[in-house]
Length: 344
Image 1 (cartoon, rainbow, N blue to C red):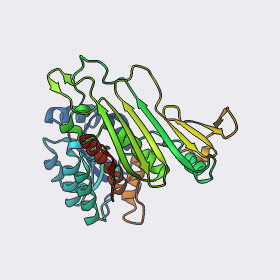
Image 2: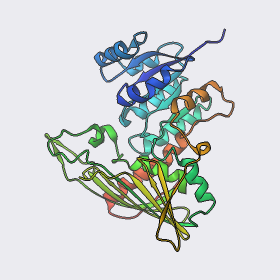
Image 3: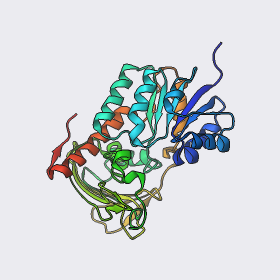
Image 4: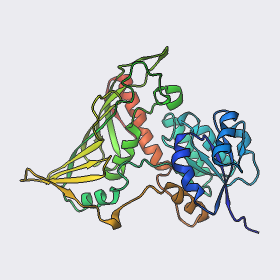
């Protein structure tokens, strides 16, 4: 007799799981979250008590993986656990949803992909960034139709003030032993740029640390990062990231072609286009039929239920390795102070 519900075990029940994934999963009648392993047993107990009274709190993730009849491992930990939990879960015959960023470095990402290829019957998915998703199909359509001509230059800015306070303790994203080589929103926006322009083929990167001493913890992850890059398409890019910017500016990308310019505001999903010969920018309406919503939980569960009938959610581990190649190259470029070609 076929099971009526997919049984999920959560490894890592932090803010993203509590605020975004859990509400969506709870609405699905065909899934059942049966166990939770968080950073401590006490926090696992509290999470279950507050959110999932019927679920079992677990002392560690290895014990969770050993539970019988689990179908899915839902990983919500920071990057330092992604590779170990993913590989173990796949080898235990589970489907895996993994929170982004994919891994600590490229080597871990490649191990995750290699393991997924060994177990093709298991569905794997990385959590996509919501940035640019709403207007994703429209941007792709406009670029394909040549609305701004052939793209030759891309400028992206992602500025925030999260790390400006010198008295604040180090955030986990500033701790290389937890977040790895991931810096600020680099990997997030590389993933977006790859969707729109294809792969980045080389980088030159510079970083700076303004607030290195965080209550006795020495931060070595940059507070700001500047990246020159080249795309396989021939376009060039300037990518600017900061966690110590005092102004409240929306993340945005400016796309320059030989017939015009397209500007995308990632906070408002507002798209504007300026054409050659005109000094005015025009707002572009986003047609309802081209709107993409952030439906990652539904996408993943649908793929698992398809039982191998060709439904594969995106981004997959191939996509993750593509952006981790850039993250690794940026770290290598900063360390060597030189241009780094990205090979596949």
